Amino acid sequence: MNRLIDTAINSLQELVGGGIKLIPAFLTAVIILLLTRYLAQATGNIAQKIGDQTLKSRSLRLLVIKVTSITTWVVGTLFAAVVAFPGLNLGDIIATLGLSSVAIGFAFQDIFKNFLAGTLLLIQEPFKLGDQIIVGDYEGTVERVDIRTTTIRTYQGEEILLPNSDVFTSAVQVRTAFDRRRTDLAVGVDYNTPLSEAIALLQTLLTNVEGVLDHPVPEIDIVEFGDSSINFLLRYWTPSDQGSVRRTQTRVMLAIKAEFDRANITIPYPIRTLYFYNQDQYSDYQPKS
Image 1 (cartoon, helix red, strand yellow):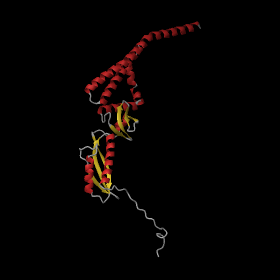
Image 2 (image 1 turned 180 degrees about the vertical axis):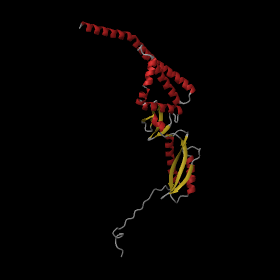
Image 3 (image 1 turned 60 degrees about the vertical axis):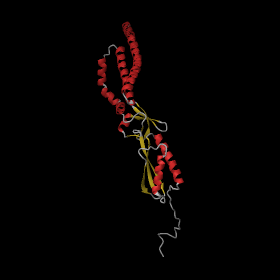
Image 4 (image 1 turned 135 degrees about the horizontal axis):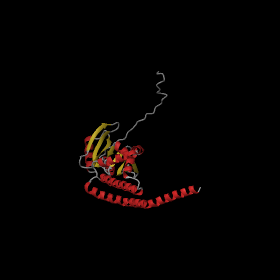
């Protein structure tokens, strides 16, 4: 019995002694992690300065900063692990990572897929930060492209987080890719309207509306003889952002209504005529006399 107690006491003493010996290593590892935090900030700032001087793309600059910070954290964490556990070899860590890479790949395939897609989006830059885009059912302004998600702000002020892989593999409509965008606006006049006068009035009207660009020149086409009107299609260009398009269209519609009223041009609306009759008297099923 005494021998068992002595063995337990000796084991406990060895365990405590080993723990005490590891305290300096653990404290050193903690200090290394704290230094890594400040070093990651410093390397990020350096990468930002270099990126500002050498890279025109804001998205690519953000990618360089993030990769630099992540790399600093990985190196610092590995170094702290080696210091905290003296028996741990850096080669063993690398070998372990290599053996577990397949399992990690399956477990985090969505994260890796989004990371790779985000990296390609930042490098290829099909759209820039601040562009207005449409992806699937979502439309808004690109706020940022992170490692995992692309953030857009809708025109209603809502934030949408889209997985980078979905953005990368989907059709993306970039509405502000160019500095101008065309609007097609339909308007109809009644059949008694002199068409040449209506076209001339609309052409003059468009050139005087604020927000309509002079180049390309606005165009007016007659597109069809409708049921109750002859229909025109107005094609004019505005700055490409959604706010300019929306406000200019409102001004154009107000100007059309005012000018048509002044020129006594009617914008017709569909008319349906209903005939009421005695169905008993005019029945298809009654024998004819």
